Length: 337
Image (spheres, rainbow, N blue to C red):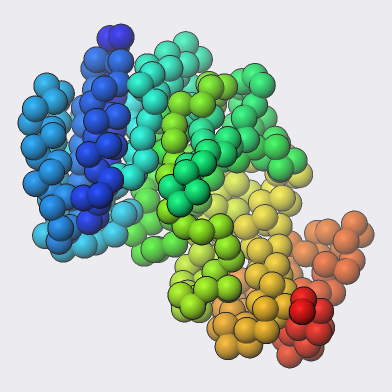
């Protein structure tokens, strides 16, 4: 299939175990006018050598950007985007793989609908269990970004990824990946893109495989617990995403849900699970995040909006902020034996 140039950006860091399969899946796309941009983000293994060998033999238009030092996935994606020539842009991580018709299906939809961004269905692959799980999939495409955000607010749709989308480059000129964050940068980026777009659509087919290398457990049950600064970064990304939705979307349900989903609900749940796990050290780290004025304000504001519907939620928030020790004792006493 021929059409306008589509740039597909692949950031990679020490991906020698996975990069060959990913690159082959991209090279084998049935869409002809494709530009492959690989950003080697300071890899210390054989990623660069393997990538060069595969791309030189591919017959595809390609570019390799080489960072001497690791600068993070956001920086890699931004550099790849800045160097791209396509009218449309896709992002692919170096350990995932698109189906053969991924680009052609998304391209056809974004052209037909004159949309700013289009996404498709996807599946999770767990290499440890060698099994697949299908992500949420709509039966039909909708139309406006607000329509899709409404489905998201009803918990009927996952919108948080960036790798199962095609974007109009003009839209992405308005935003960048946040290079000051190393957690949840995708969430901030995609919800800003949705909130700033005029028209959105979807292809209701599974066209992308996301490889999940993590065991599906909460971080609080592992020894590799994030520092409280990482937790602040995660909430900062959510706060920025929520603010962009509030400023650009008129629907009150969506605005309220954005505050709930990104800020208050997640902090309350994380603290509850940490207390039940009996992990006081990590609990205290989370509580440190509440010293940040903006996070406290958003938590109180968002829970106050739900006072008539869920007064218990509001009082739990007050307890967590002003009596964190009491909140911990309440839920640690319910720890499962």
